[in-house]
Image (tube, rainbow, N blue to C red; front, side, top):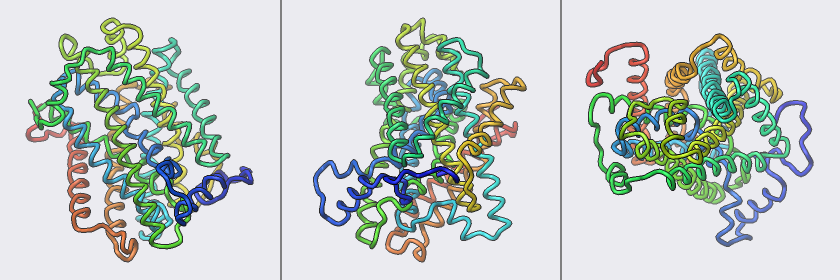
Length: 442
């Protein structure tokens, strides 16, 4: 909550939830409420974080994968999603068990010099995230109603800020708004799949058959995996679960972790299905005859004549919903990063202006939107080691996590996942700066 804002009486500081929701959670933890619907009281953090896996940056990568290689790289999307599930679950667990978010743990653990460096990298990542998300929403608006790109960004900024103001009433209304946009994206892609001539047998084969046809396919696979685990999502998830339910003992924490793990699996599975749907749509629409399609604008202009205006409209609505919701989540993450690293609390509008200013500057000086999206992903790749390594280290400390510290198998999976993702990000960076990478070709 921004400083100077009035918090309604029915909203508590703990988790920003209404008294009704907090009382319901407390009743579940105390064993006074049972039933299958009790899980719904705990839904929100993973759904909110999941939008990071459906942001405009995913659109371009998945479209390129489907257009050029059909259903072949679907297994990469699955592998990337499983890695994301693990790290988002660890982030949520850190907040639940310790009552502090990932940025706050950095502030506690690092010397001042390293803490400031980590904060600086994370702030740059927040701006890069906003750049991609603003551009995605603006591109969608410009294609849908013929609006100039700068005007589309202004509309995106205003609508995003209006949605963020829901935080004044607690996290639940904001989570519902973001969840509604996540649902809109999913519905739009369900429409796309209903219209597109999908070869479901080939899609199923591509999902379970690891295969990299050539060096260019490897490059795209690297892009899919390297852009999956996003820095801001790791910071945000630990904060959204922080203090939620106010666990009083280990039994409370264990139940909260169990509910959180379930939500992560469901929310990230849905996000994974949306990403797979993006690849499947592109494969069915573009692979035969239009395999050169690689950009969002190009995909829309090619999609409409091929599958009709309904398919084109669904594509743009999903892109706009993605840009708006991911921009909201990016701002929340930026606030959490600043407050966690420094302890400062600034007004929401100031935070919004700080993170969106670079996006407007990039468009104002005439940088190509697609090029700007690529550069933003490079910046995120540079920032990724900070939260990822920190999360693996903190959740592995028994002195910090107690009985909830990572076990041997979780540690092995976390280190392996971090190693693979970071190595692939290094490959992306090398390519971005023109450094030859053996096996990837020219």
